[in-house]
Image (cartoon, rainbow, N blue to C red; front, side, top):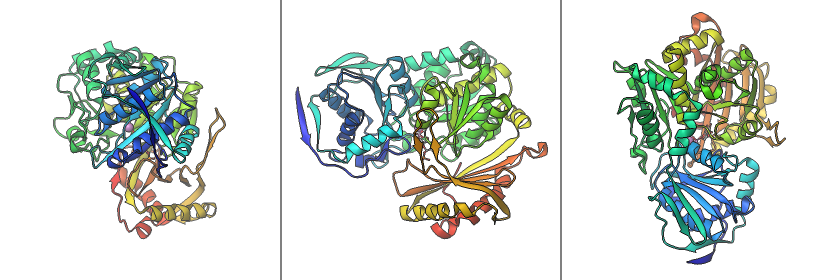
Length: 543
Ligand code: VG1
Ligand code: CO
């Protein structure tokens, strides 16, 4: 087997975003594209000679080819061992767990998460560090710098490793250990949750539907929910990962998981329903007649996590990303828990979790997780909900009603304007940014601004500062609007407008969300002039 050095040149735009480098699949398949980025990772993390890495992905188109390229480059770079999921599959939380369990030095996850897959869709590569979490900005910046001065990369000339066979293989001097992607993750879940209680719940006739959306959680959900916990066969649907996710969009929200919404709103609704995304780190929670907003789910889990064995000691603290609703803040205040507000993206939770300052964290984008791994974790959230329902024997709708009665309700929605011209979107954000100091005291659509700022985060653990993390506008009475540009898209710019209205009146806890948010939506439009600036009359996606 020959080690070869291939001459290359810097490729523009290899800057990791909110969650790794995401591009069109054909871009990743272009000459040297993947190889340059992988070589930049090796250099950006200070070399990988003698190290142990974890490798796996969500099974999307090009996952298998990319895994073979990375293995050959790892062997050429002197990596001692790569632990890879069978058929190069690993959900993001399972990869995080493997890095931690096996004390690996880091790992590569091949995924564009909730973005669609296929030759004409999206692909992505993400590097996680030894704590199991996404590389912090300091490292992703170093990787980016390396991409800008790339001149050559090393790769072994060798045949493909057969990744379908469990056990040890060799590639040059490097060991390739092929593991069952589900086993370690499933045993972690069994340690955190009362599987007997959940089994008893199903034995008593509790019904559920889990939609794996043709993505990576299928095998995990089948093994844990059906085979271990006794959910009736067929409870898990769309369970075979496919390279293009069955032609769908593996994003668990009311738009892309509409069949699940229709099911819980219809006559054959199960007691509980859930879905996960492409790489298994997101979750959507539904019950008979109800879709639970992710921000509310985080709050309910924070209030009830102690019902599961893994969290019986209580929570050290909780964290949410800035645009996530402040529902969890109310739980933290009532229970005397520390609360942290971080920028969007899981990498900002890592230090807080490592330092033991928080146990639970979450984002409005259907991400919830805890200190059991360093990624958000879709199936974990589903199991925590099941454990809580097994203990309380309440319905999902009943849980929510009781929660809002106790803590009040933060009505919430996110409006996305997709594929805007980048210059237009940036000009809009810049204009709003410039006006921030003048906004307090002014009224928009009848709402007076109390405070306005551009969110910056000072990490309390390592002292690093992250600026430009979105524009926050607080109105008198508690309502809030946040404006942000997405960092995961692969086409133009996506504007996200996060809308929140705080309601305490017990008579107003069960109203249609759009009705309650109408005033805040009008204020956001009056503030930013979205329609006038972008020509869009309505958002593309409301979640
Ligand atoms: C989006 C979400 C963010 C999430 C990120 C990665 O980022 O808003 O909350 O952490 O996706 O999720 P952005 O920059 O597009 O708003 V995953 O499951 O897609 O990797
Ligand atoms: Co994801």
